[in-house]
Length: 440
Image (cartoon, rainbow, N blue to C red; front, side, top):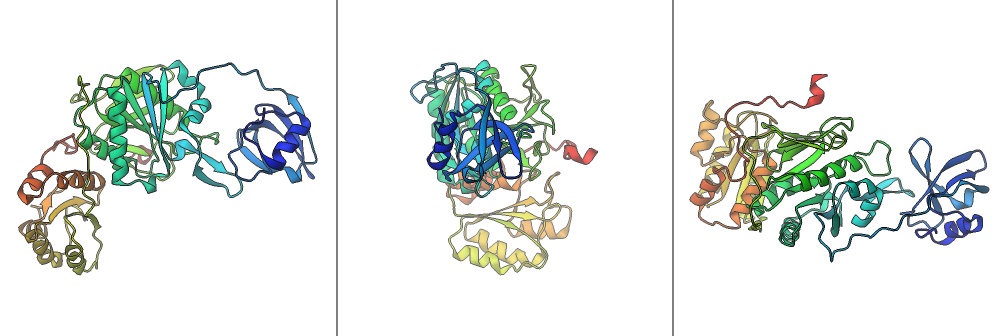
């Protein structure tokens, strides 16, 4: 069968009796290529896809093929039941898209959302060894398209799956904005009857260096085998496939654009370490929140907020523009211990008098804000700017969005922003968590 092919490619493959999974030799004008015939996700109906012996996939136009022969037929498929939305497995996978659910578009070379969750399960059949899995495609978007309204839908889908009996939930998500969604789910789901494990991939599934299989399998294992009731991000812990690290959803940041071990807990330890090959989970935190009998949801986000990254020479009049736009809250990424130029002080004061929350985080990755050290910091606090300890700026903006949906009283907003709701504020004990690749 060549179920995924159409047009000229289908005609060519049918002529030679080739099926998906067969090992072929394809003759071109100047060379021969040997590889396994893969399913096609291309919109170009003339292209066939081969996985070469070196592990890379290549798209070949049928118009350039001068001959084709079959070296080995594919093994006969074992019949298996496909997961459906009608049956809740031990672990429910909720797919929102991203690289972990992507394929290469061979006519352009770009990566685009293309796989359904069932196709992910077909791609990684080993996960059947771990748990009974069911699946749902909630969205099929890249993570830069994520919105607060989608956070609400994901939280609702997680609660539904847990209420229906899933032991844990895995949320497949693009890596670029995964920390924002992890924070949103953490605040939206104050009590969980099972783990919520967010997982992504730095490299798409067709690449031999892909991290998708290990990340996904270890996440399913973690969702089924752990007794914690928190939202975590589970990704490669080092560049090899030895283990993954589960980072608390309000303490994690993507630290590298492309490395497989890009995610790291900041000013904190990871919550757990997962060895997939050894089927082993090690809990690393003492203050882990455990499973509850029921899952509670309290979601919804105010989007009239602004994340302001200060830079030398920035004009403070931007604050007046924000005030006039109807903004309700501003998170500032200040320099060092939490500073902007003193020119901003009267503008911040005007904003806070209008009932607008202004909170200060640091552009530094590690450490915490301390606005009492220098006169500038004290001046900004006198203007109403609130220091936000060691909260990451992306976590702070999501937390503020969640609070502002529930509170209009500025005093109560400040009280809640100062409260450690989900572990987003760390203790004053310094933890050395510089990126692993700094150590050589």
